[in-house]
Length: 308
Image 1 (tube, rainbow, N blue to C red):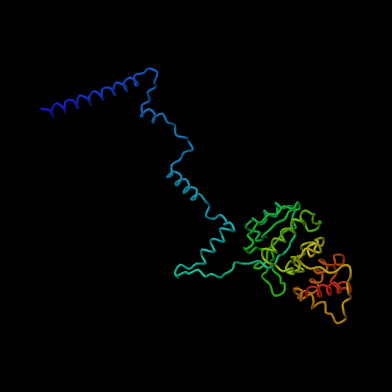
Image 2 (image 1 turned 90 degrees about the horizontal axis):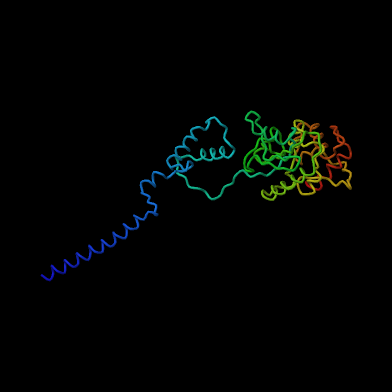
């Protein structure tokens, strides 16, 4: 009997607590100043931002964009390099990466003039599929430097020619084009930008001083760039290329053979007249005849003594 009474007391207490709690909640909800928002209404009235896209939709959009890419569009140099790198791995064999290897490391720098009217025109030329020509850098008259190829990539700037034993100069050199129509002088901002670039390349790739040459050195008779106004003396003073002692020239000995000396420098002597003209355009500048004067021989002899 006692247990039944205790149960009734507990039950009545619980009912009283629930009733009190419910009464308070009812009072709050029935307050006319309280805005009542039902969950269903909140969801229905929520505006989703228009730029909010689900992950699946993003994936679909990217796939559609990839499908829209023209498969015949030319690959960028980086894409070509990646493609070549991929095709150089033969999947039918096991692969274990060796530790010692090299990329194409440039050991020469070849300087050109563009024979065009603007930097923009040259850049456009190097981006047209049918031109089949390129260079690593283009430097404008105002000193603006535009890199068009990675230094480790093989540019198409040298063409046919020979320097020493090298016939494939593209594979070992960096090509630099200077915006110049072939007749004008080279502005100071352009030369200063060139000197800065050459210093960077020489330091980064340990390029020897003798390995800074012009296009006409490599292809005399076929090419004449950079033109006769290019300041090779200023470059040589900074360690890029060679120059003679203008303040004093020792006469060449009677036994000295200037043709052999030109060959030792690197010139291809198959077309001797073209080589002499190319040499004099670079070092003499005033007399461009294919005949060596005593002063021409003295210049060759001075270069031979200093650098070879």
